[in-house]
Image (cartoon, rainbow, N blue to C red; front, side, top):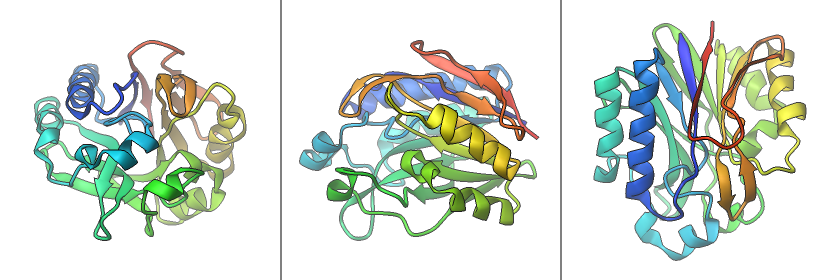
Length: 237
């Protein structure tokens, strides 16, 4: 099983442009053997909570037609993709949601970020359930950015027979998660941890990519670099 940790600099509020970029990355990663492609937190809009709050036109639904290029890319490349954006909930607010689009273009799973941080609490509805999906007999757990500060998510993932932990995130240059969170979750719980992070400027500040993966021993096994659009491939399992 090969997983691609993808990264790019989203265009603030431009869902269509970001979907096109996501679809291109999915096709390219699939062509290099990836079976799963993970994209960063709020990749579909950029990490722009104020913009999202003020502009409901950028909120998506699970069956949103604007995601058709992603569905088509998943079918064409025969991959599953984890795409994250502001997706409407039943209470009339968006969640920071990871939609897992399967190789057939259908929805495999949805995960709404449980642990919101700072201004996110004013804009988004928190999730209430863990995210899981299974592909080719490999079981995956989903987590989003601040979620990863809570080790019980990884603990529950292991208890639920997950071996790969997928983290869609937005980490600025001052964030210590690259040293103190992701490798620690991998090592402490014996998981493959795959991180997708953005680069560029947003309401989160300056981010420097470094998407990639850690093996169950906590060592880096893939790194996409600090400032290029693309992905890193990691063999998991």
